[in-house]
Length: 368
Ligand SMILES: *Cc1c(COP(=O)(O)O)cnc(C)c1O
Image 1 (cartoon, helix red, strand yellow):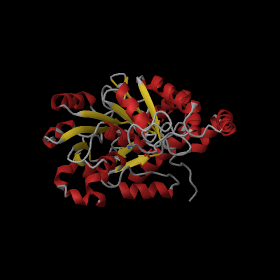
Image 2 (cartoon, helix red, strand yellow):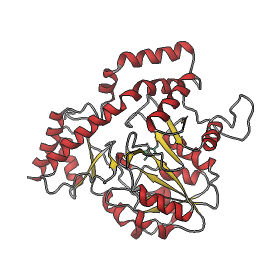
Image 3 (tube, protein in one colour):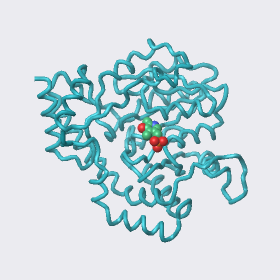
Image 4 (cartoon, protein in one colour):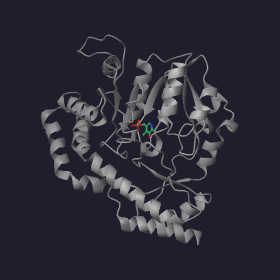
């Protein structure tokens, strides 16, 4: 079967700004500006400005972004960090990598950590909460911030899927002690390889991450601490700087696609469209519907040439990697229920309304 509607199309985006990208890449190569340098600092400044953050530190990927924050907050063995039962494994594996214990919390109807279920999981070892703004929409930050304040916990926002998403008009990542971003190629702002960043309003935290990402040195050979190599490279920074000015436009285009899906799918009673939270601006990294006959629908769409995805097929506490935690699966009824029903439909800025209609018609056809 020919692909009629791909899940994503990075070539379409490249062709829109090919000349600018080609020029930027060539200039990095000509200047040998591969690691560090002006491209990286220029992107950091532009991204801080775009998100309204005081500081931005580029790192090598979105996983390292969270890891660096945890390490520089001093989180390690003996500590517990709370996070959601439904995310990409990066949100939790960084906790274990620090030597701390991941503590999972079930999800709400928006596929986010359920604020009402957090407090019962807090112990005297809990140090932080990693809130994941999954699929492009902010978690209930009012409730989560309130819990963090009352229990003296650090709030880290995993914004890997939520570039330009806001909560009460403020960019995600700016409410917690730090916000972490991935620029993996398929994210809403994507590099041409791995890349990531941390934003924070705390200048000391920014400086320590700046040091840590570069072997503990701000000045060559002056290693104040042991760090690691988690740098953003010049080529990726230059590419990201070319793309960043278009991000608002691309975000609007994603929202237009989502609105059309909403309109066409609402009449189909077997389909639950993505719920949008009051006070949150959704940027639709993914457009995730819920259907009980998910696998059969997915096969039907595949046979119609429509690519779909499942984000994610297994709730984190049920993964083999977390067998050692010996979690009680009964505590994750919502996340486990969702894993069998979620289906991510194609969404990207260049997706044609004709293609969106074709997807909606194919879903209608399946149910009739
Ligand atoms: C993509 C992603 C990450 C990790 O980013 P990488 O750049 O791939 O390391 C972390 N959290 C979430 C929710 C993600 O979607």
